[in-house]
Image 1: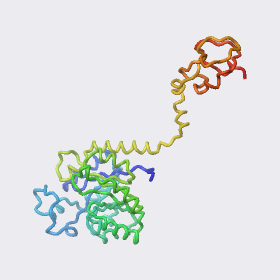
Image 2: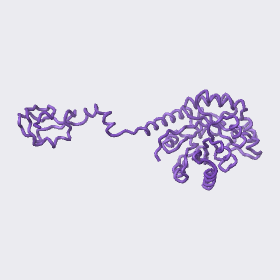
Image 3: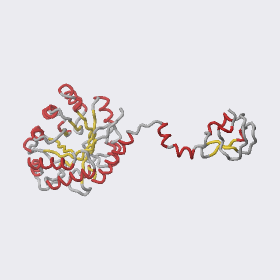
Length: 341
């Protein structure tokens, strides 16, 4: 599979804003500064997502007694979501938001906030939500981090049978925070392409620039990664995130790869570009002695040296045995006019 496109980079803010509109807008600025293509949030509506028994993945939030309290505290109002989307439009970056319930997806749809969908891996068997987003006819990115092989087989077959499979982008994901390199399992990207004949992407939790750079060389359409202002910032996702400057480096690397992929030149085109240099560094033929008119050329009469001159070094054998029609001098370049035709 030859990749002819540049993967889009998604800067995931998630809930790192901690419910602060100011921090959210500031992190959009960071994503823009870095050059990301999309900036992603998460939409949690606790009454349609959580129960009182939902545990914290990492309980870093001292002011919240339950996960539900956390979702409520970090939520935005309708007006604030619209402002966030409008700010993204103003800054020229695409707003993306993962819904974590059918009601959250309906909210995003009703207010026409997103151009495409991104579902977290916890929704891999939430067929009601999956059906809803595919019926919108928009592109759907789905992460695989919390799915086993049977889950993927079942979900992809269901999408293929009921929806447009070409709208699906399956996002390889490892739900370990941070993901160690030995658990990256990037072999699965090729496996998904070969097994399912679908488009793929990668949702990264490594927090490592080198890992993300390598992933961009693979046949993916999207690379999603968490963004943090600093490795000292608050939140459970910081260890799995790239800093603003790291993301900026990654974006430049992605553009460099695009240029490299699109560089398709012939050997002759490259030679013409280097013609002046070739004339200097390639070897040509010179007289290695003074010779009178009508001399018969022997190998010892000819010297191979730089610059190339009129006759290339490859012609030396063809000159042996020829007769010169005029006298020549030591270290003069050999010319076609020196010989009888």
